[in-house]
Length: 491
Image 1 (cartoon, rainbow, N blue to C red):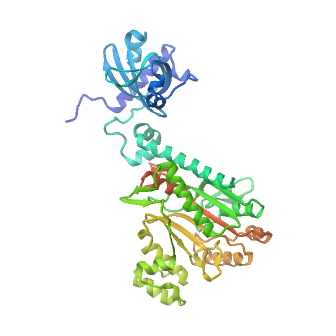
Image 2: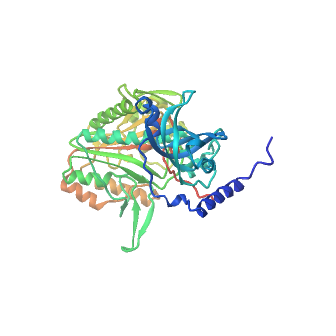
């Protein structure tokens, strides 16, 4: 039964504004305080209590709970490391009556002695209490919390305060990125930065975001991949480079896609796609060990085995295994279309056996690949930047890593034949002329770079967000991006 006497949220907020006005009128404006001497954290004091017991400590954080009455109060303080209990007693604090007026959500600084209560609760006996910032909004109450996902994503700052497990996800994300850098740096890779704004959006088949440069009066594109500038650096003499940064694709949103996402790309001269496969396997082993302490990861009702050798299989063989259709011996697109239609895969707009086979793989095979699987030898028609396989030029020396039915990495032996690359760019431009918005543009300067000379090179792209989803057990990419793309409320 609802309580008709319970104040409305707007009334509660007005009370907070009134408290602030009273403080300011009394010359105690918290917003005028510029710093606070913080020497300790909640986690350090609770994890190493014996080393700090009886010591004077100084912390700052947000009040998350208030208990007690009369001359004694117990508050919970949340800082960036966790929670700790505050013990407040009137005879220790001359301004105790004023302190009792603080609200849940207020940010405070405290000094006092670390001790344990009679019930064994690690606490700080407060002897100095300073209001550092007044919270003028009402945090969700602790039992129901902030559950509405739309509000959680829009107001991530509140989500992080009231849902500790959300904070944990992003701590793990940061650790993953740190370990990736450590892994690559240890292998002699150099981290570099390349332009976000480009005259052409290349390196992948995707629809770009378009903007305009006022001074130059030209259209420019947010990058859809990191690939082409990084390969130019290999041409320039850097043998091992990587970039870990944001890329942007003007496409739909779903649990595994966000218009901007974080990508890792690496390029290594004198290596091929098999060398890259070996490195990716080592990277996943390294991350599982360092981040999780185990190579068996529970995800989506499955146990993913990251410590065992990853399966390696050609795309055409996986299609045959799953569907019974052998595209490997087909040369007639009409035969391939009939086979695809028999599987209820719409390929009416596709004209080659390779494209048809790749579409069949996408729609019938991907979700079958639960354990880590390197899918190799992609058709040349769907891989405009990958080197043809010398043994069978219908296919390229390319792989994609699939885990739990999702693509987690994409790599190839990089195409370094300028004549072949030019022909493939021209084929992509023909597709663009036919209305394919995601076809790769013609990049004349990149052709020139290849003519200068690109050594045999192995390249890799990994979507960091999907990797973090796996390592944190999240089912939506929005749960591993701090500020995911959201539709405006008024739209």
